[in-house]
Length: 230
Ligand SMILES: [Zn+2]
Image 1 (cartoon, rainbow, N blue to C red):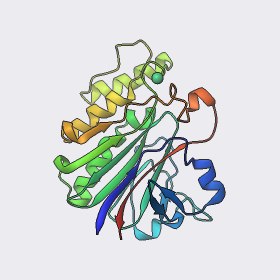
Image 2 (cartoon, helix red, strand yellow):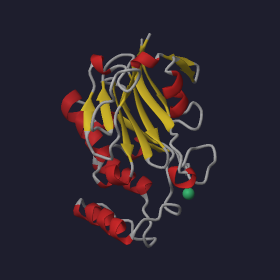
Image 3 (cartoon, protein in one colour):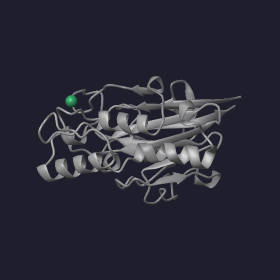
Image 4 (cartoon, rainbow, N blue to C red):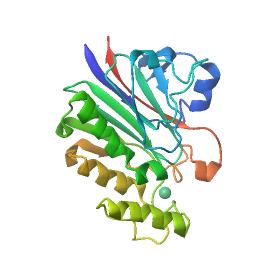
């Protein structure tokens, strides 16, 4: 029987130990075979990869990561999409009627370029999903108060939002609110309000998460979604 398995990560298990051991692991009582994970490069693009069976294991052992992508869509059974984050936002999507899942890394650049909206578009155009049936979970990321950027980046981000008829982040000078931007993008993509779940945790404030801005480290949360068929 098919079901959607998803997990928004915190410090345990972490990306560095996953890479070090490259072993199967148990998450929320479910055994996840490392050979069924898919990892993409995450280059702050807005590119979505359409997964195939042979993508399983990408980013593990000697298999290269999926090149130049920050998100992916899959309808392959027992294939698990991994998004790693530390301040950037993970967004996990599923449509249980079509049994399609997607995951994106939505940091400043990905959010500016609407990667969340692009994932919905990929689900609709390539897998015939109805946006009204798509559920999105937006995980932990850095909040507006703790996300200050240069004036140039603030202006560039807000110009892009205004051009796309979204509300810019003008409430707090030189601060960006990626969570409310992603929320607007998901609504604009046709998702229903009640199908968007915001997990309101700030990675910078909460020590249970890795925060690049706070720690300057290279460890990451791992966020996972896939279609389990057992
Ligand atoms: Zn915060």
